[in-house]
Image 1 (tube, rainbow, N blue to C red):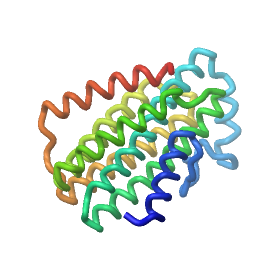
Image 2 (cartoon, one colour; image 1 turned 30 degrees about the horizontal axis):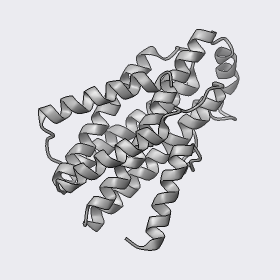
Image 3 (spheres, rainbow, N blue to C red; image 1 turned 180 degrees about the vertical axis):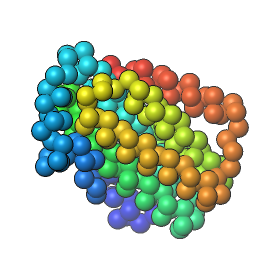
Length: 218
């Protein structure tokens, strides 16, 4: 890895942890100023109760943490592989996940809330896990990526069921994130990702539950 690449990855990691993220795609339509639905959306969202607003913020904080972890995972897996094709694939996925990071950060501000206070901890843990997965070889690394994305997609499906019906901005963001995660999982399988053993999948689910329950509040 060249010095420029090291600086670039360090910059991305720092931005991920501090919430200073760049988006290459606009925030999904119903959350965008100028949308045809904007007047109706703002009117309905102004009716969010304090409890609903707090719940939306908690879920978006969880999603933001997930994107912080995604940046770390892809960085580590990119470092662990010697394949230029896989490096490019991980980089493309990371750029799309960075959109998610920016979208969720913006939505948290709109909800007058904040990211998780434990983001450096989440980032460091995901970086270590991603590097270990990468050291087991490209097939295992891609399989880990696919399983991670499938589990994230399931979490997002759950969020769509519990987000307030009139929180259109959050729902639009979560729906686009869900579509992207599904595409990333399919790409990883298509690139040769193997099946993750059941004990590892179970451990991933357990760790995810700890993270989501903690990040919802802290």
